Image (cartoon, rainbow, N blue to C red; front, side, top):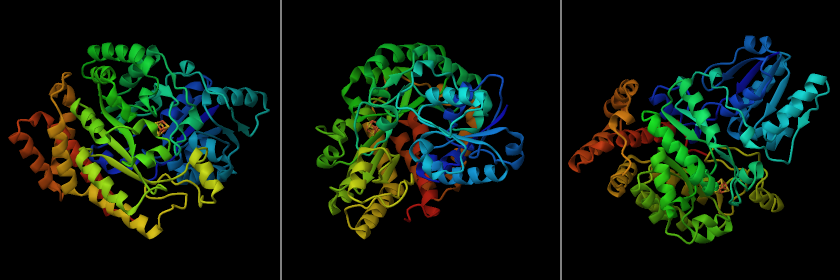
Length: 498
Ligand code: SF4
């Protein structure tokens, strides 16, 4: 059997980091790790090829040559998935579809032949067994959760790792929290299931064998969801691994803000090489946090928690939400003030949206407030918000403009540098910038420090670092100016328009 695995194009939202990715000479941010895992679950004798539309075009010849086309997608790839399915059908291809988009919304894709939904470790073998007997059903689904300790190492050899900004692995699935807008618990449950440290080390070896990415993303929805196994099992092994691989790329992941309460975890994560962390702050208003059931963010000084994580050596990226039922006209200013004082540079502000399968979706449906299919774009929503639409649109635009301005990013960068304390776990410059990255560094300096219209902020940051004896943070200055570049390019292309 000849199988073509297809990964649709990502919509141009902040998450795709399109401009930043191009700036560093890569074609896409994230490799299709889900499809690579599916590839590892297929019969060994099948002939596999993979096309990621974010990296290269799909040709009719590729489709014609294959016996079946497997598509995996997230919501942000919906439009591209529709186009691919139309095209494959017009060429007579048999289509198998899976991944979060189809798991939640398979009824929108009538032309797909077989849906293999939920976690492929469970449903794909069932499909393959029936298919071999010629009795395959159109939908395979399950209410059970897979044993991730049986998940194979993704087939990294199907892609060229050098075309991506990141490499990805996943330690856990599921999250113990109950945030009402989040579909993670609906998809993966509340009890985080974790892989063994040996699996993760094997995945790391496979990643490095296939090229050296700039960074490795642990694509867990909440890495610290299962603190016991993380502290006792994985992190000690990762610390040993890093000692043996001092020039391996740093790790990035997503965690909850209560990491700030756990000094032992902070130290272990730092030693293991975690640097950048994404945290859902959502809102600064306690009542709103309680309403959305984000209890882990309540009863704390959120600003102090962010500062502590910055002090301890992490760089925090923050997610925020506007359009909550409890929002008032004051919410916009409060959010801007918080972001400015936090020193968070990379900020993503979403309008409240309700993914299918979430508690919020049920609530909105009951109130007749669902108006469209989910659109992953930060500035769009599938619900009617309580706040007057014009007020919300203007407030949202005001927040986006304020926090993406060069002045604001410069001020936040200074706050970050002032907050940060020298790390006990040091990363040498050689470790930060390998010889292969020197050209890349020069290219970024050329764009951000010479060509770009915001170049004065780049040089202001460098001068500030020099004056304060902190030139060791030069790479951060570069990163922060690159984020400013991403924001600028998005605004230039009409991103803040709704
Ligand atoms: S903590 Fe994050 S992953 Fe967990 S339920 Fe809340 S938003 Fe979802």
